[in-house]
Image (cartoon, rainbow, N blue to C red; front, side, top):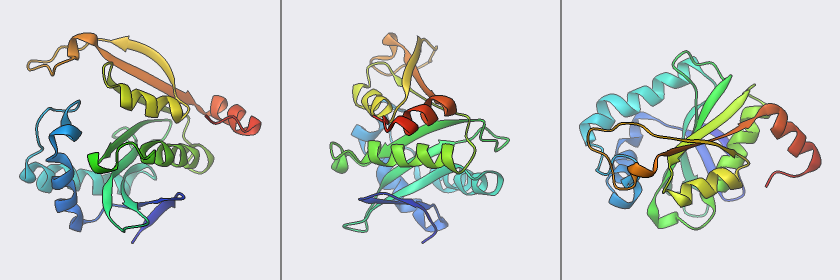
Length: 190
């Protein structure tokens, strides 16, 4: 297992070709996909596009998307990412997370996000972490806030086939390295 980082309860590791079924199961849950696409990601899309892109990203950046493994069970429970832009730079990376509904409410997303953000700023040279979600996705917004990100703006995008709640817009949150360092020095990471 190519471990990227560990928390008290989780291991974040690099994805491998063997993770197709894990991603298919995760993206097949309607609850997981509710605020994303509203429908399952087809297996062929995961096999031919999603997973190959995750693996390519490791070749151009120290950041990326990482499989989340529950230490107590050894089970794949989702993924978290500090996703760099296509050029692989880490000046600005997007925090992302997708966890199985069976582990929601355990604090895993916040625990892993805090650890990933810390590693990003302390070891990878990240300058800014940002994240966005639908304004109505309160659980995801709470993870962002508990991970130390602050609200930046609400904005509206056009979608040909909008999901319920799209009319309320998208929200963006962020955390800059200087703000993180100040909070870290005060022991005030939320």
